[in-house]
Structure formats: structure tokens, C-alpha cells
Image (cartoon, rainbow, N blue to C red; front, side, top):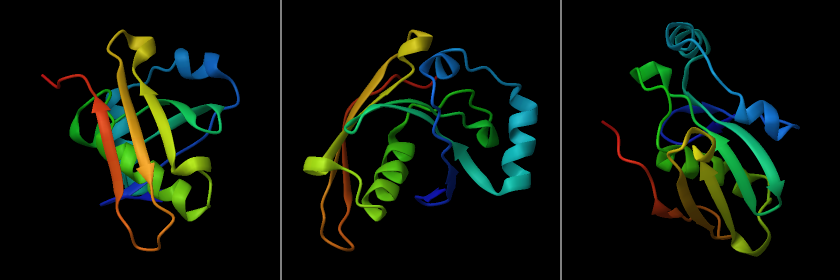
Length: 126
């Protein structure tokens, strides 16, 4: 669980193929977010200690897949809290499997209370 303006449920998957095959029913996802009190779900697969593949369902707002920027900050805040990132940054790839890739570089300062910096390219919401 991470918090970035709201609760983000972040399950880590052991198998990239599960992430690649991800689909869900939007109405059931919206019900789950209300029941659990989550803003989004961030399904992640860690390719290595600095590179993550992510899907970010956002059913609470009727969006099948969010273009990652808010989720990236929440995930980075969580990683900071557990002292994860070597070198102070991680890279996040989202939606590559869906044909609309987003690629973000997230800088994480070790300083307590410091902000998270997110830069990169994302797809446009329609």
C-alpha cells in the first residue's frame, strides 16, 4: 500500500506474463476501489532493482488504465519509505504491452520529507 494523495494498492507480481495478460471488468474494479478505499491499483513487475513494468487501473474514475504520473509518485514514495532505490532513481514502463507506452524516470532523494520528481513521456487521455 502506498499513499500519494490517496491510497494506492500495489501488488507485485512474480511473473511478467501475468502483467502482460492483465484485463479486468471496469464496473467490478470500481466496486473494489470503493470497498477497499483505494484510488488506483498499481500492478508491478520488477525487472531489476531500478526498472519496473506497471499497469495502473483507475476504475474509480472510469479509466481502464491511467497514464501513470500520480501512481509513479506514490510508488516512488513507497520505495523511499522502504529504502529501496539504489542510486536514487527508478524507471517505470507502463502500457508497453497495450501499445500505448509511457516511460518515466523517478528521482528519489534520501532526505526525509523531500519531494519525489517525475519526468518522462506518457500517453494522452481522451
